[in-house]
Image (cartoon, rainbow, N blue to C red):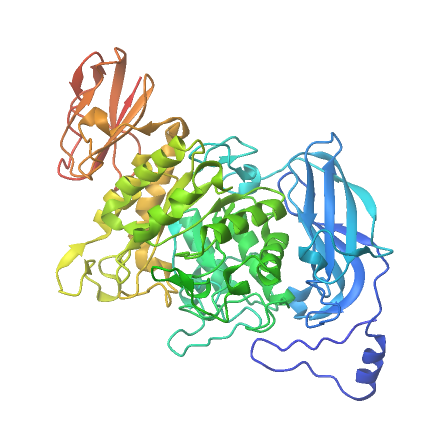
Length: 638
């Protein structure tokens, strides 16, 4: 029997029911499910497999019991060999089709698996009820007939190829400076947008509201042209424009984007996962399912997901010498790891952790205490069955204060999301790579925000008449997209970093809050794609390489020239202004072939003025093929 939904549509129009049909539907409310289980999805290795339980009837807004806090569903999935085995958190899914129906109630409860292996898999459901049982493992009583339900299903080999992450497997932290795909063994470098931070403030998502007049919701209309027939949508064609935006990014060979999942009280104040902005214990099933459609599509076209779990303005915002917290109503548990924060992490992980390529960022420009940061990271690690990369982002001037406390075994962090001025990226990336390695736990170090706050990475020259220069308040032109390519993109990669995401600033066109047109940085994305393709197309073992600036006389880590190498195998020398340099091979008597790569245009390696060099001394690598005053990358391979 169809149950009445009280969901309000995205435009605020209530669903209608009347007369006898209304009374008939109300009479049926509250009927629990029979405990049956459906397994859906493409039952293949690395593909999303969804288990749906017909469980107790609930509404999103129920308070006693609250379906989010007072039920704890988890599912243990195990391969027939015994390894691996994952205990996956489950969640309330309304009618099981909420993205389409906007349902607020139902009997469907879900858990997701991304299986590592082909073969037979088993599942066993644990279903517990009790006050705050979802976030307190010791609380609750088993609920019949749902507790202990078990079964099996078969998983085949993946049939995906190319950039689709299902062809490569889950990204894993392996104790190194780069993440590795568990299926293919391929190591990962990222490049893409860090802006707008309000990507999910989209008119087509249910119950998404603009709280600030100057920060409207997005339509993503500039990317309507990029939607392709057959791509996913919901509710008769909603979502096309944002799906198109993902397609555009993938077409430029960039492979990552970041987004806030909660910013109430922040700069945008238009993204939250709850049924209402200030109800932190009731989650919006249809909105979160719709988010999931976009995120799944991004994964399937090779785009990494950078979850920014909170914004600076809504953590506990500690200020001043005494570091006293400022009271912020939107902060979950006032910054502590309480019921609100635990539930938030659990709900996000339950719905999205099965995706293969992602990281959890504890917070943008995070100002919480070390204890709060440590506790959050440990809780996420304990709930996430797949142990995804956990990072944190801080103000540039607070990096020592934040990061030094979290290095090594002091925390479970496996990486960092750096914010620095565009022209110190190389030096700062190097610093945290070296510091983390010295502490005994190498971090994955990305540069995800470039200063100044007003400018960030500027639009392309000619975009809506823009001259291409990012300027400071005094009107002096300071840098452009070419400077960003040299000092930020290649600065991070040649330090041994994990890649970049580009921040758009507040002052320029298509800025960090209002951007809807990724083509505003079209040429910049070309440069990113060229860089990422270089490493993969030329079989560069970057995961085995380290920065060796000392071999080319750059002992201070400035932006004059960079060297990344693996002794006895390969050296890369990046020259931002062309020319030549001496490479110190005094300790290496091998013979090397010298070729050149064009970071502006990409393509095949080219011949320069010198074809080979013999080690045993400092040797000249010769000159690049042309445009000697432009940036070039020398590839010196044994």
